[in-house]
Image (cartoon, rainbow, N blue to C red):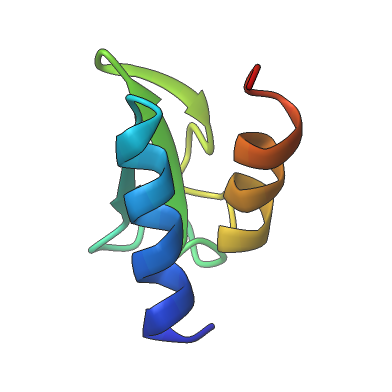
Length: 66
């Protein structure tokens, strides 16, 4: 994924009141560099840092009321 796409998703999430966190260490072998979507310290997506940017973008586009 491009850093431009990551920046776009982070900005969109911030406007909607969310934070996008990226894993910095390995919790499991499959999730290094993956993401969480957080609102008020509650993980909404990617509890084990296992959400992709596509997952978060889909959530922000389809699950959040306009």
